[in-house]
Amino acid sequence: MPYDPQIHHRRSIRLINYDYSQAGAYFITLVTRVRKNIFANINAGELALSAAGELAKKVLLALPDHYPAVEIDEFIFMPNHLHAVLVIGAGPPGGLVLPEPGLRQYSISEIVRGFKTYSSRQINLLFHTPGSQIWQHGFYDHILRDAEDLRRVRAYIRDNPRKWFEDVEYRG
Image (cartoon, rainbow, N blue to C red):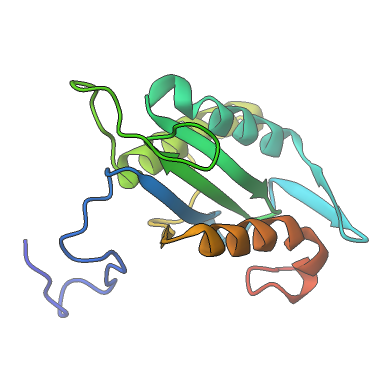
């Protein structure tokens, strides 16, 4: 169905005609439903993951087991959101290679959907809240275009706990 502003109220930020399954690095941000703080606590700039944060981290780190040619680069679970760099077509450090011929390529959307689904199941088991929505719909993504872009995003991710109380996602 084509976009109809009378029906659809969210616009995609995705690049038109860009193949989001092609080799490259992608910076993603996922936010919890109603920005609920469930993943971590931050005290004096130090981050401590909660049990839900540990579960979500385990699911994130297992993504390469389920999505061949995907690598998890820098990431951080903040109290109510996740920042991560996902690399499709991971090769030697600092380089990219195309996946093996015949190997199914997954798009960033498919990978994020899988992560959200499985992490939600695990967290709902922990909280005894079957079927509850953990994540907001959609996610933010940015295609990392060069080494400087990757360096900047990695620094942003590492500095995030220290800047938490200034973060637009902060909900005290």
